[in-house]
Length: 285
Image 1 (cartoon, rainbow, N blue to C red):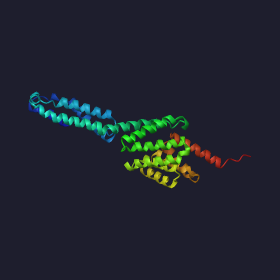
Image 2 (cartoon, rainbow, N blue to C red):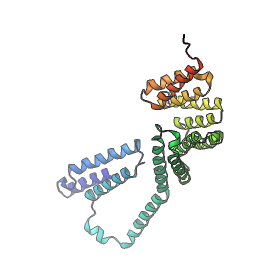
Image 3 (cartoon, one colour):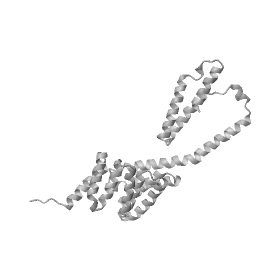
Image 4 (cartoon, one colour):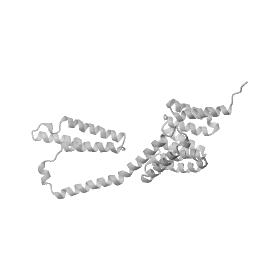
């Protein structure tokens, strides 16, 4: 519509013999910039960040007003009744945004902040972040209640639930069942996200369902064979079974080759080395 406004303004200017200063080249550049910005939003952020969509809409509105101002006589001659449908349509659009789009943004805001809080706990002791994990689980539970179609929120809730197993080891199996249901909800919404399969694998490992967990890891690897996180979780899955330590070390080597600065992978490598040393202690003379 913005580009149509630019063309119409120039055509109108030519028709009345006026130079095209009604919509100068500066505004044509703004129109092209807005078009590029809108295209980038569709392929990158998908209007996920409200501020970006609002900025685009505001600048587009200013440009339309600048390039397509209605003649004064058309405004004065327009019957008042014709404005009523426009007002009603505007109210319907606003109501739709509030009722339909608003909950999606609220749920995503809750999920995003809770996931960031969990990600910051990687380098801390499990006993130190109970409060943060409680808050994160509550936020994610609320997020999936507001927007049950948010697959990432279900996966993050499964992540938080599985982490809770470190705080209450006696409930590992029970929490594994809970995390499995949450991961299944995420996979029901989308089966093409590797992380969802990893959350499912972790939940199955918590229930000692090794073979099924391995299948979920393979699904994640098929989707993202060059992702370090996938290889880390696969190596962790293999390390649970003592017979799988050689394969776990091989998978971990691939993970660290893809991401040498992966802290959890480096820690797992140290743990595997310590376990290997305890199994085959050195003989001193």
